[in-house]
Image (cartoon, rainbow, N blue to C red; front, side, top):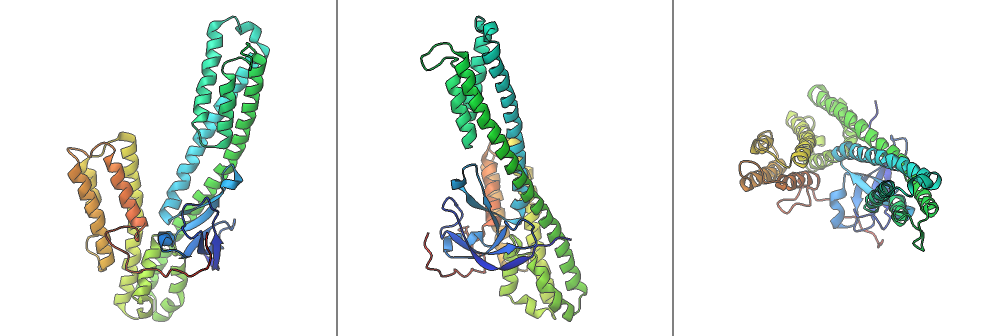
Length: 384
């Protein structure tokens, strides 16, 4: 069974393109149980503006242009969702690109080998011009370097003339051939990106299974374990959960010194309640994402869905921090309901869903409350 195991602490310096840190570096622990060695858990920050990244998993992202390399971070729930979405988007774009390359080959063949058959056919000429124009518009709207470069080449070829404005199918064919070369390079890069996304998705799935297995082990240990067994095994089990959202719960357990009071049935019950609450909020975030997807697809959500989201919240917690968190989410849901008519206003529910997910993930970033355990800001002479 795979479980997250962390190595010793070290500093991780971020490329300047990274947008997730004001200090330009984090204190991290590498996930040593992951084979690639490319993933770290953020355990310390050097700027108070970075505290909401604590407990997140981070890794380097390599775009087409190596100078644009940056670091991205995820919580346990976003690591499970985001890579799957990324992989699906890459696969969709690859299919579109492969079709475009095939169409380019058809255009090149017509320009270079069959021009005599089509040059006097206005319909055929217009067909190729419109085809190239559509491809150019599509590619120029992209963000990847190779796609944009290919779009520029195709755009210059769509007139089926050379620089002297003479009808010159050979010149256009040469430009399209260069564009096709760019697109083939893009396909190769997309293949590497797809492998990376699948790897992150696999890590997210392994983490999900590990978390569920660990929570079950912790519950069994706290309910049936002797004091000696709990003292011996609990630290290792909790160490597997050092990632958001459980990171927040573990800090609260530390603050209340509950792990030092495991002879007390009350302390054991409190540890279990905290972990169960964090697990609920992870699943609640997934539910919010599914509602969010419905809003995007339908541009509509019924009020009943918001009422249901409110009703399933854990309103009776033993901890003030979780009671406050539930109140904030409830307030956001009720605000969305008040602003709607028979149904939530078009597009408005999407903002509400995003706001709730951000509140769950960035609990130091909300103006309504601060998580009761304020982290230590590390000292460093380092400046970005």
